[in-house]
Image 1 (tube, one colour):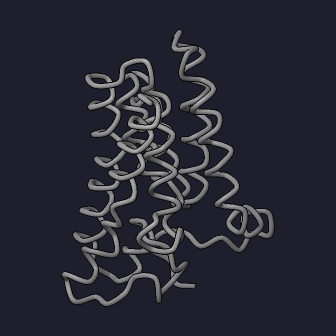
Image 2 (image 1 turned 180 degrees about the vertical axis):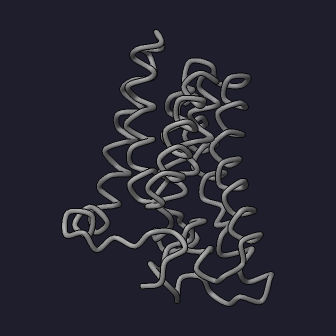
Length: 193
């Protein structure tokens, strides 16, 4: 039953909908009714409140990092299960009828929790591409792929399956973004639709 506890730890912490809670607390209304309709930092940014978006980003990252760090202490044999569950919780939170975010920031936290070099590779690709192309979806999808590749290249083979699985999930959740990228219609951060 240890793996069930490990999964529950990741899922329950990962499913806290910080973007929605912060938006409601700040008087911005229900974040699910604007933009993409999801609860992640990129959609919170569409409210125009950069501070709120930054707080959402950090908290979503934290809810990926914290359960993995706790799993290292409580369930060391099942850390990958906790990592996967944290991203699943963010993307499919039971509290919001299983409609959440797309997992990019939460997976950043997971990557740092698994091994800091993996997290560093994730952050460099994510922030680097975001700064250059200013397309959130492209930067996020590239970072999730980079984390799985970094795990393999840096000798963390035990984490490659879970990071590859998360990458597949995150890219699937971005399928509408992929279509817009291919059509050249994906918006850049800071641009008007």
